[in-house]
Length: 125
Image (cartoon, rainbow, N blue to C red; front, side, top):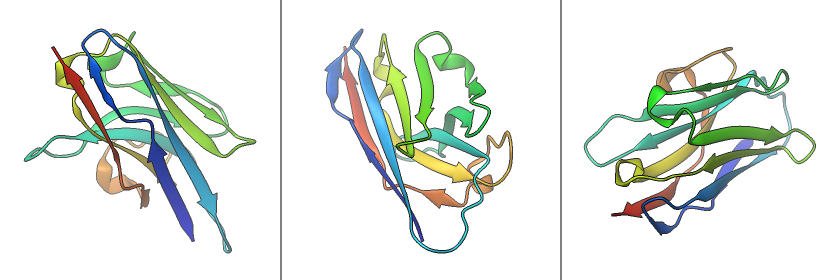
């Protein structure tokens, strides 16, 4: 069983920073994980890819709207995924989800097998 638990979401002012954390727990069985990602979703919208990282190689990938502001990283020893978000803007307001995929380079939500429950990020102007 694989469990992903996000934390770190808060309400902040525009221009502020937050760091999201996703703790991964695995019990029993095998867990094929090539990449982990952060997605975000606002009411009435589809879940949007934000950033991904190859779990072993550490290669990051970002959606254009967050390049230069967000940094994805992972701590393999702690089995933890992070998203450092700087210069936050009101349009970054969303529920942020971490997810795990057995497909390298996946950017579509349907390509991810495991999901957390999300953490709310609210950015006010």
